[in-house]
Length: 306
Image (cartoon, helix red, strand yellow):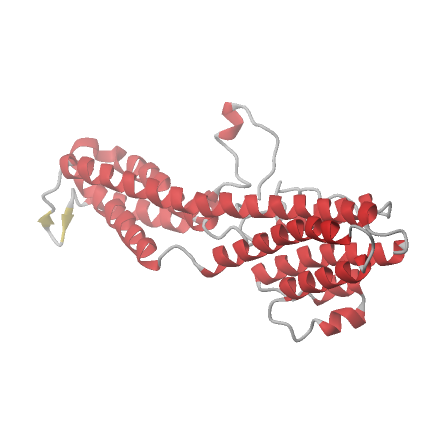
């Protein structure tokens, strides 16, 4: 995720870090070459004039803009839902941590309360690694220790296993204390919220936008951009490469942004900052238990946090 101070209108024109421009330069160079060839051949291919003008591109461009808008809306809906799910995960983790320290019987020591709270931190890190298809072992060993991490080694869905262990630990801690049923129900409400967040993230990860949409949009954008110089060359002449590259930048950049935003758990510049989010959850849980906290996640020199 790109996090940078607000820029004035002039500096925004020349922003490089965080822009998709650097990832689409080869495509723009290709479009510049095609446009230049159209100018020098006067819109001919193998000596034959391409009978195109601006009229069909106006109608075609309108349809393409509508389709691009649909694709970007679908991508942003996935990004927005993923952001909400991780926000709910943070809220539920804070609530459960507070309940662990306030509502468990006095017979439960601080060590057991902290052990249960550590499971909340481990759940967040395990979920992050599951969504990014990375190895959670190092983080889990740091939080839970080698023995407890080894017990999770054979689990396919580690966040669910950790949540189940947390639920069992809370039930054992409550025991038969007076009012334990009501307290257990209170915990269960928040544990269900954690489970919903985990399941919601898994749903987004396992159900991408249908591939046929991406293929159709990709082909349509490039067909439009390649044919455009031959429709403009008679009216814009030597300005054709400049105009066509600018239009291609808009369309290809929109497609690239849609592809990045549609995968909110990845490592692309516009994906969610899961490293920072898990660090925030860890800091919140530790702070509520009056324990030392790690440093807050700060953006790199490129204004990007992962």
